[in-house]
Length: 142
Image (tube, rainbow, N blue to C red; front, side):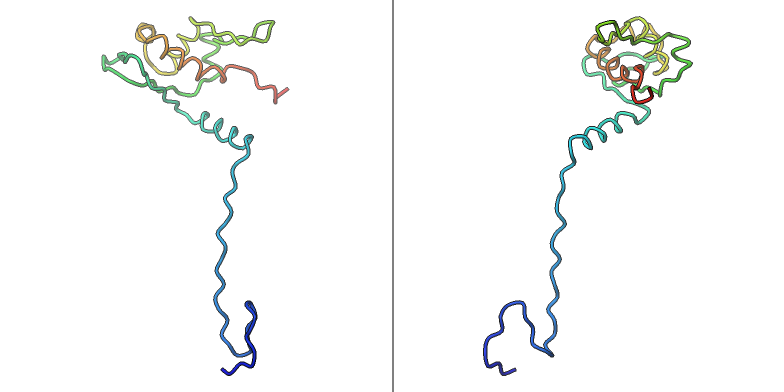
């Protein structure tokens, strides 16, 4: 085609084929802190919960050595049988009742209490603190 003057970029002469447009890549949007927290909490609510025993393995009811505890979801019947292992005191501090928590861990993992009592204290606390929030009331329901 004979052009008397150069065509500016972006303009197409009649009869010329259009050039394919390149699609811009989709922007990457970071989740907000609230969305990230909600996603993290949702991941914590998936059952069964598995907690690795980092410091010492224990034996299960079959005599097998285990390196993680698998916990089923607690139910109201567990509180009825073993009592609530968590309480909030008058200063709004969350307090774990160790004996009750040991019995709840045993019930939820289906491992006898004497084997749970053989856990390393750091592993026991990891399990207890992982379960703690499931025994607290949700203010959203009030």
